[in-house]
Amino acid sequence: MAYTEEQVNALQSALAKGERRVTFADKTVEYRSVDELRLALREVQKGLFLQASATGLWPRAPRQIHINTSKGT
Image (cartoon, rainbow, N blue to C red; front, top):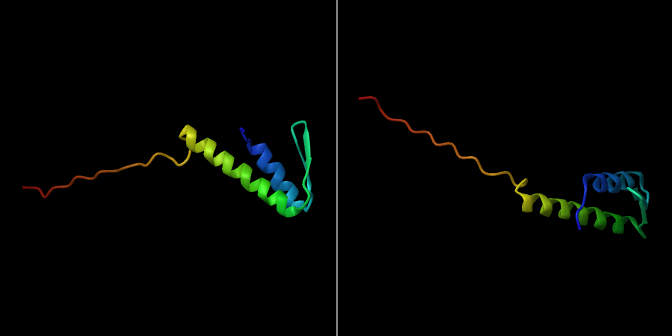
């Protein structure tokens, strides 16, 4: 499933307020406990990371800098 930043923001906002009901887009989900909400947030964050990794957005491509020096003769 493709996750969005809006879903992460909605879950984080609900967690910060101590709410168990989260609404994003046209869906409302009510979690049984705050722990279940935390698990959902972790799952969405993990999904976003995997999506970004698959597209090459994260981790960033490594940069290499080569410096060549020589003693002047």
